Image (cartoon, rainbow, N blue to C red; front, side, top):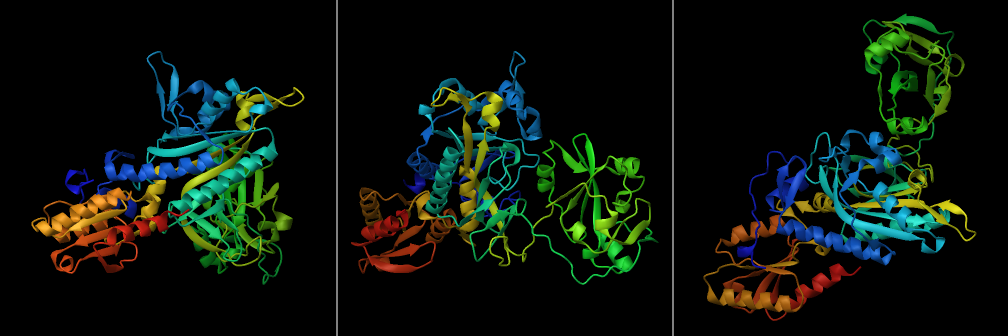
Length: 574
């Protein structure tokens, strides 16, 4: 390919709407253009990167026994209602009707479609295990699309679904996909961590891991142990209760005036007590149910743990001030766990009953209780792990202090069990002729997100630094002057030689200043640049520069093609 023929509109200015570096550089480097909020057109170089990631994904899925299919984007509502997810999935589901008023949705995921396919085609245990995958556009109506390809309304994803006879078979399929994902992200040149995670709207009763690309711009927080293999999303990480030792019980509880003191910070300052000595009492609404949640004052409530512990609500939120007043007779800042109304469920974090004494709301405006003894004076119907883990806490596996990092989710593997096969009737006959439900797993890779994540990890002030396996082209040839016949001839010959060796090479044949060509090459992020100028060519040499290291060397014009090939082959070894 010649740059003069390539649709590659580079920009010098940073787009005003681009918040993260991957979005900025993909627009500036001419990889994507916005069509609508959260919807993008991929230009030639961007599409080449996507196709390379897809090729890596296909090779690894096929190697683990996957068979590629292609399912419809438009899905009938009947299947989603049959699985119970039509309402559960919420506002992110794009819903539409055809001319006959029949309901459909644009697929954000394909559990229903694939299970419907399998229930119509699988009859015998002899047909299992079965692992089917596709690479396709997905659609989610994000409330606030942002960060370019990181959080869009339309994105490209690989999803594989496994169907096994039993849990042992699912365990094998899960491990195959886990291993395949490690190879995929390693081959893409990404620094990543598999972390324990929450299943979210996909559901299922088994385990799940997210694959996180580590980057400062990541939306997710990950805790990990530097001394063992433990890593988890902070929303999933289990916590060990911590006891505050230097606390004495000083007498019976007392009602004290705390005028206009509603927040933890205000109450602590007013009463001269640490946050560890307070109990936050929160009234929550889960669908049509209300309940109290107790957590130590210095801790952050993990709503995902709370929701999972109570069975999973479609909607979970703090109760409004009006509801608080109606049930407890006070404002939210004064809610407490003493003498709560009968029938109101009280759920406490595991640390609360371990507190020797505590300050809490009195369910009376402008008043708090001090010197309460939670284990004796609070009604706690359920005691659970409800808090967010914090950096520095002891690893539950080995005891070492946990560290925190930011991560971008690029893949997730789920053990679904029989959640969908039971709902949709995906049944097979076992060796004894008995009907059994298929045991399922699902496994997703964000293809377009992986491209953006690579840029988040691999860039500098000049532009993108593509890992060689997914770079749009491996090598760019830059003739310093298109008016120097000898330089042009040498560039053309090297271009032909590299093509003959199977190198993905691009020739910048534009009649532009050398500085412009260099800036564009660095912005786009070609891994190798060969510069041909009259001064070095006079000595039979050209300049070879590696984008990642910035290392520059003079190489014989006769040897440069083979040296470029060796660099690329070394990077592509997997």
